Amino acid sequence: MFNIDDLAYINAYRKSMTSSGGSETREPIIFGKEVKEIVPFTLITLSDEQKFAVERAKKYALEQSIQNAVRKQMTQLQTQDMNNIKQTQALVLLSRIYVGSISFEIGEEEIRKAFSPYGPIKSIALSWDSALQKHKGFAFVEFEVPEAASLVLEQMNGFMIAGRGIKVGRPSNAPQTASLEAELRQDPSNKCRIYVAGVHPQLSEADIQTVFEAFGTVKSCSLEPDVKFGQPECNHKGYGWIEFETEEAAIAAVTNMNGFEIAHTLLRVGRAITPRNSSNSTSAALPTAAVAAAAASISARVSALEKENATDVARSFLREMAMRT
Image 1 (cartoon, rainbow, N blue to C red):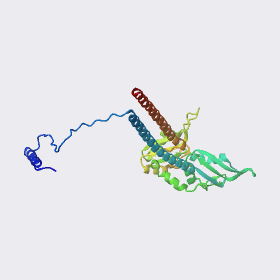
Image 2: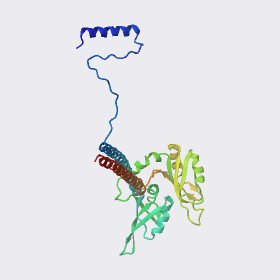
Image 3: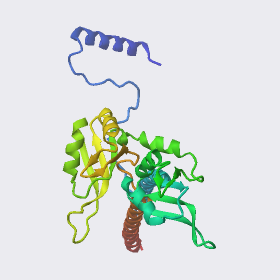
Image 4: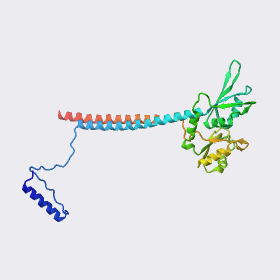
């Protein structure tokens, strides 16, 4: 509680501050008895035991921070790996077709010759009857790219080979391929891209780009490379992708150039299915392994540093104890 004299002094001080406008700097007034002098703040000196505990806490916090960052990154990479694996499986699934009603007079070579203009063939599994020593009239064909299989499904069903109209479709054990194909076609990288097959070996990327520039500006034209020793003129596999600036140009190119003859070879043209930056599961797994190795290396360095600091603190503590005794 303030007494009357204290209140009077406070009022007088306020009036003096008001009259002077508060522009002058005045020392603060402290009321009360036995006022202690304020000592400036200083850090206490840690003992060796406390220093050791602080260092351990720092190293633990550093290691936990590194582990959390690595764990988060590995989780993101694992999610990316799963997406890449699913995409790769979808591309493989869409690259397979069923071919039925095959004439018994033809074999694998004739089938390969009929389908290879649409894209490179990875394998042909022709059913075989060991008792009759002939095939059963159907086969499964797998292409290297799904675009080739899609074009075959569109254009080869009912095609006459050796006097018989073949039947082409998806394998019965491959359901929901239509939704998978539609989803891949909607990939942002495929919006303005088209697939081109049946390119003559003597034609270059520049030749193909010049032809397709009639439909719009071409951003890129890449043919799948196939460099063979002793045959420098065969520098591509006869298929590739073209990317336009607009989707309208891509649609116009597919409509007008599918079946167009260049250098006595019919072009097979369709919308792209394979994403531009698609990767297989093996290459996608490499970043995860690299992160794991880096994490192990960092953890090892932190542990080594912690042991080194702990040893130094322990030695200092032992020296101090020896001096005391």
